[in-house]
Length: 342
Image (cartoon, rainbow, N blue to C red):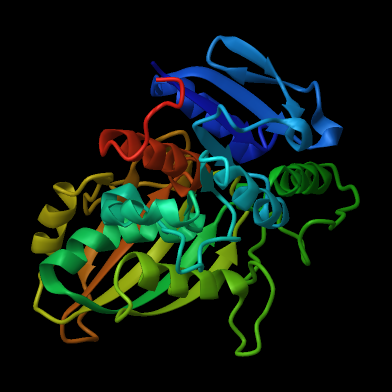
């Protein structure tokens, strides 16, 4: 028997990507249900070669559903995840609502799959922030080898991380600039077309933004609470894929060649690192791909044991939809859940 899977937020960027990936990976589902808010009831979404009509979240009965993939934002997740979990339906939530709850595992399967064992406390598992997910995939094997003490990361995050409206704004502004029209700003505080915005999420009292805080706290929870991390998160005029410039300090010595070999053998990582023009991955090339790409691996001579590298991944896939489905696949592989109808 296969699983019954519900996708909440099925009309959004990540929800649609979840449906695509479920079909691509031939997830063992006997039935997939698309759920959305009242304004999207009846909207058609694609699932493989099938078309699903969105049903209303408020009236859906989860009692016979095994897995709920939720990408509806923090407020609906806070309200609905406990109610769904109470019906013994596993909720894998993409929002930030549950990431910092000590009773909710925050998981990237290649990094900390063992944390899944604690899911029964609330039947909720949290997906990390998109910028955190790709970072910890690259950091984990290096941490195992030489023990990371400090990370300095600057992110270059695509507009799709801010949703469909943000993608539409970049498209409109770009067209307006080419046609000498008026550039209007709705989603972002400044123009995003042909520009960079050094703010993602709201500012906090210490001057960091919430996005930067998320990366720090989530990396500690997923990888190691002793790691020190500081981040600068920047929105860039790219539609899909986040890029990161990463500087890492280690407790033990490690060379660039050693780091390259370690990363080449790591799950979920693809190393593209030729020291020649074009011998690296860009966000355009990573879009639509599952891997976390690492390039520009080199020793950082400004610290005793330092490595610098460039990291790129499709934020809608590994940063969101793919990671959620990998969590579900890992739960099945570890026999932590079985179909209710089985």
